Image (cartoon, rainbow, N blue to C red):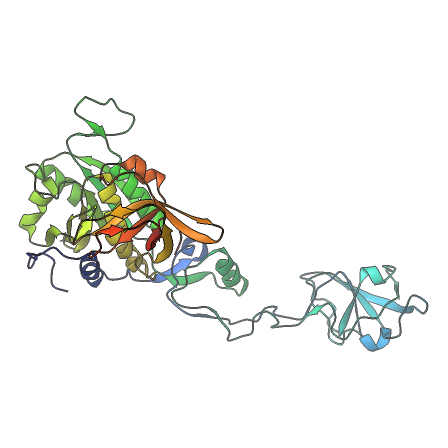
Length: 417
């Protein structure tokens, strides 16, 4: 991909074009061995093949007595079989290596079955004798024995490359003796909000100021994606202050996200500060909300930077469409973009020609049928409506109105994928 700043497109880019250019410019982070617990939620970067079997030896599935079936095959309540007890085997105690014919060994669940034994008689079928045991029922051959390799055989592929590791995967990997796995780390995402009018929550608010919700919104979204998020907070509308804050943060950033200062106003500090660098593209996207966008690289390490619009809905929708796929590619997780699902639209909506509109909505299922109900108005400042929604209805660029009852494609914002 050519550098985004190499040539600004005179025409607006489509959402798909802009996302494709971003993904082409993003490389997954290098993988390295990580302790199992640190790898939770990360995509594994190798196929893990079992080097040991599970179980690794024949073991008892019950508390009872290890026997040779031929010695107890005739046992009934009326004609019980009596056998001398030659030992006791607990889990982790494999002292009795072989069972002589005509004898029994007390055995606990998980304990290794001695050579010669081919079945286990559970306690319930015995008198639980110590020196001698009375057996009143016969097991079938192999009953209550877990054979070696019954669960996992040596050479089985346990986890395939690209799998996102969950608790069950980690349990399996630990069970076969793996202490580390190769995976890509969590990306470090630095979030900065620009605007001299912004104030931190919990501080006094003047009549011309507003609280900074964007940095919390974007940092939380990045963390939920699986990244490590650093919320730097507020940067005033001064280019040198913005560049100072940015350069201070690059040492701990795999990706930078800013909000505000990318439109056409007199105080669009991000655009003013970064344009002279020649490595960041600024332009418009055929999307509502979120038309003004910027993407490129900054610093000696060419750290990717996303400059998002300042209105909270525009900022969040932009994150979903562009930043989230980039974070997932850094982590080696696929698919990069959130998939859509079909749903029935409950109320008619309009859309501007030539723009892909992403409409806040409530997604639900009623009597087995999925529906999407638009939430609030189109204003990109309406964060209350954004918080009340759990989905975005995708209206294509060539559609200007959608009737109630129409099947639409929906992005489910709270769903893991």
